[in-house]
Amino acid sequence: MDKALQTMINNMPEKTGKTLDEWYKILAKESFDKHTAAVKYLKTEHGVTHGFANTIVTLSRESNQPVEDLVITQYSGKENLKPLYEKLISIIETFGEDINFTPKKASVSLIRKHQFALIKPATKTRIDLGLKLNGVELQGRLEDSGPFGTMCTHRIQLKTLDDIDDEVISWVSQAYEKSV
Image 1 (cartoon, rainbow, N blue to C red):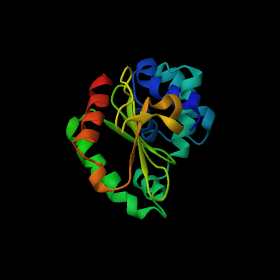
Image 2 (tube, rainbow, N blue to C red):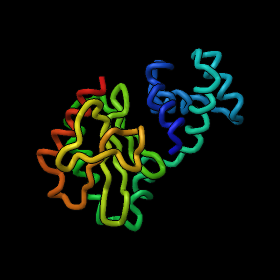
Image 3 (cartoon, one colour):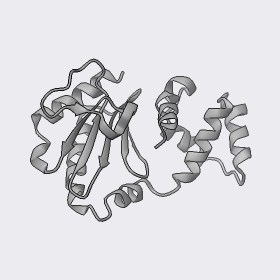
């Protein structure tokens, strides 16, 4: 995903008062034939600026695929990695009910007030777990963000279920706690 677009999505709750998923739900209750009508609705009825309204409507139309289909597509040809994804999600769900899991075409963003993690099947043998841990030094398995750029500050490479150990859970938990 384009860095500017990801930044816009990350800033959406602060700038518009709602997450992208919440905007999707609002648009789903309405029936718009045209893109411009949906943009106008968000601007006039919800006070959203044009840039955010346009982005919300565009992404909403792109995301009409069911969420689970996006995840299935991500792991197509990489089915051996799906248990890692499922284990990560089941652990992260225990952190709190304020997490939005937002699947995209190639990854799943985990957002509290801000994005704190990103799960991406990077290769056929590895998941990259991106974390937002500002101010934390690189150490052990906690690497530079690599291909995530500014979307995350760190990355952990996961190849087996055993890789999702107490250290990984602790790092994800810290990223979750910092995302308020």
